[in-house]
Image 1 (cartoon, rainbow, N blue to C red):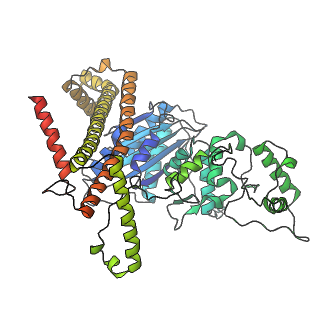
Image 2 (tube, rainbow, N blue to C red):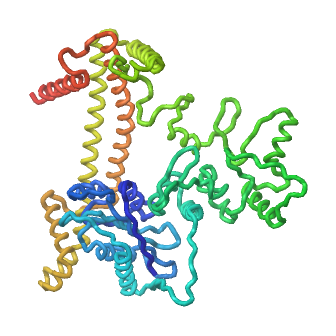
Image 3 (cartoon, rainbow, N blue to C red):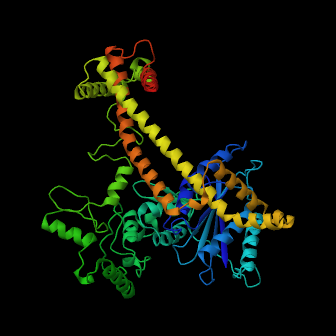
Length: 568
């Protein structure tokens, strides 16, 4: 039995393709295939075809899923073969697609991402609602019949039909989180799976939230229960066995940090039933590993005891780990620290805008051309104060790097620009090498994949066979001509050597990117320093040229001069 689903991809095409091609889910990418593109560069190749569509639109691609029943006798290789035929039937052989079979769950399922724009006439795929949905299901059911798999029953509304009440957004989010937590290894993988597999969009903030298609407002995770806050989700991902037998619908001692404290129960008010108390105590015993009677006091009872002891401190028992403090020996929560860094909080307590370089030196504003500064004395006072602060930082920067003359600054700036240019060139060369390696692997795989079809046709020259396998034969000829043109013998291809070489290039690219970011920050800061000095002191570092273009032109001339000398 195969169940199918389809949804549109509007903004996360690259992330979606990386998710379905995850080596941990596809047996080291052995269960990954493609048509009309290379899996490693499929997003770029699909976007290049999509740009040829004149009408545009927000839908970049479609994500098609085919899930097989655990009761069916099917192997991953067979599922990949069925998935190829399924993708060809849905796209009619006109759209690029990447297909991957995942084996990380109890049932085998196939992911297909195909380009919304076809590569023949550059028209978009049109999902026309129920008629297209029924066509997709008919193709899947026919493939299941041909391979001896069961067919899922179709829903029909008869006499005994009872109205099905819709689930709330909170209930849908709770079920999606429960499914995704079981397979995620880290919180980042959890967020990616929620976006790719479940169709949610992640909203980061003080309280994490998700929103899906059809919702007007996002749903905060802590509304689903105490086990669905960010801290509890991280703990559930790290300790899956601890929560396997826990009833997540019950309320435990874990409280939301910003919620109000519950009032003390008065005489005459309804108390909790014995069954609820027993279930809550059993949950707590499984989580903390201690007896319920030895539990620390929480809520108003603990607050009262603290006031009597004179400490007056409140603690949140829902967080088992705290950030590390000097001298206390407590361990920090890496998940919380990472979350705070991503939201823009700096380690020294200051906050900087996202995308800013270091938050160190900015350009001094020209208040004479600012209408708001001319009309508002308060705004002008604050702007002048910020300008003075930036000028002090500028002079400290010059003193720190021992820059006393314009000549020294030009040497300093050009060295930073040369470093950024060198790193960008090396990253570009590495990308070209990776692209060439992937194209070589792609053509070799197509060569061996369609060699049998070509040999059969070459031997018998049956035109009916040619019309039936025309696409495979043409793919083989293209791959063979490419390999001959580049002087590559496919018999000498070794998959392990390719994987090692590709991993080496990828690690080199990552290392270059790590060096590129601080180099860009230094170049950006130096450029702001130059403009601040020129605007305040009137010192020209590059005479007769634009400030932003002069250093780049000068550096390019120096590089060209050095290359000419090497050639001579």
